[in-house]
Structures are given as structure tokens and as C-alpha cells.
Length: 312
Ligand code: GLU
Image (cartoon, rainbow, N blue to C red; front, top):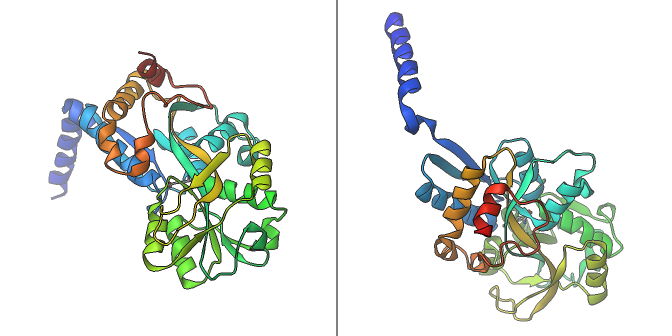
């Protein structure tokens, strides 16, 4: 029995060595976010397109804590593509904010995708009318390693408060919505394309109330952190949300690593951008993704393979 299995192992080893391209499939992991966000379905769609159109590549979308974690996974070579907010990409490039003293020289841009709106959500009847009311409350500030969490911290500070003034919980969008329903958290931050899945779920059972950011506070945030721009969440975006909400937004990007070769990145970029109609069916926000706008506001050096695609 033992002899047979040794023989089998040897045989399989030799077979693997000589079995050619099929066994040599290159694995491409796409770091996304939580299941209640937009990165996950859009990243899943990108993986599908890469599998359909790039030979010898096997792509999958991974659930992660989102932007900040995705930057570190890319740098470490644990993933090949990642969805990342443009503000977080910029902090990575400059070694500022959460990336102080970190060496993140591998990051390379592929494309800018769509707006990700800062949505600060509570329930009707909570008595919370603005971030100023967060003192002594329990606030969901995003998953550990999310870009959302950085936005939450900056916006809370722009209101003259800090995490020390409240109880903060590091929760994914789906967890935050569950805990809003259960009354364990009083409000939650979500930085994501609209409509965001987790908030559509919430609106199906409860009346969400999305908080506006006052004009003077928004102006201060945009001055301190230039990647924020003004945004409106139109009334009707979610069931029960009747009025427009004034807030701020950043942009989603797709980022890769300098460790990847030019042909692979070119082929993956072409697979996605030659077939955008497929992504448009996956999420309304994906309709903002276009070849024409893909380099507007790119905050880091482009990968050579992506540059070749967009320059052609
Ligand atoms: N932009 C969010 C973050 O980095 C994730 C958004 C999403 O999952 O769609 O925290």
C-alpha cells in the first residue's frame, strides 16, 4: 500500500511538471471589501471578465476589510488587483495618515472608477440630527482596515469631536446595519457607491435617516484633505429617504502592483475596459466607469500595462 502511494505521488509529480499551460494558470486575487458594499460585486464582475477574456489566468474576488487593508495586501504580493479609495491611495503614496513610516512603493494605478459617497446613517427617531450629536453614542466607523474608517475619523474630528468622546465599533457595512437594527449602534459610516447594498437592506425593514454635513464643515474637510469633493445623495436613493442629503465623496480606483508584468496588466485592463457593458449590469454605479474618465484624477503612477492600454 505504502509503495503504491509513493509511486502514485512520484507519478503525479512528474505529470504536473509536464502537463503544460493548464497547470501553469496564473492566480489573480482581487481584493474587494465586505459583502454589503459595492467593491465586492464589482470586483466579482471584474474577475469574471478576466477569466472569460484572458487565457491562462484564474481570477477570484476576495472579501477583505477594504481600502487600507487592500493597499497592504498589494504591497505584500498577496493579491494582484485591489479596489481602493483615491484618498487612501494617495496616503499610501505619500506615507501619510495611516501609512506613516510604511514603505508602499509597489502600488501602481490602473483606473479611476466611480464616486464613493460618505453616507452617515442613523434611524428615524434616533434623535441624532448631525455628527455633533455623536458624543456619548456608539458609532460604527467601518471595518478594521477600511477607507471608511479613515473618513469617519476625519469627519468626526472636523466636527470638533474625537473617538474618545464616543464608543466606536469597527464593523463591516453588513454588521453595522444589523447592529443599527438591534439598537447596538446609534449611527454608522459607509463610504461606498450608491445605492449601497447594506443600506438597501436596512431601508427594506427600517426608516434610514442619512445625516447631512454642514456647508462650513464640508469646506473645512475639503481644505484639510483635498480628495474630498461635495456630493448630494438624491432623495429616493433608498426607500424612505425623501430629501436630498449634502455630504462629501471620494473616488474608487483599481490598483495593482509593480511586481506584475506589463502583458498581464494590459490583458486584464483590456478584459475589463473592452467589456464594460457586463459591469454595467452588475451595479448601477459601475455605469460611471468609462475609458474616457479612467485617468481623471489618478493619484499615483500608472502601471506600464495600464498605460499601454489607455494610451493606445
Ligand atoms: N470604500 C470602502 C472602504 O474602503 C469600501 C466600499 C465597498 O465595499 O464598496 O472602506
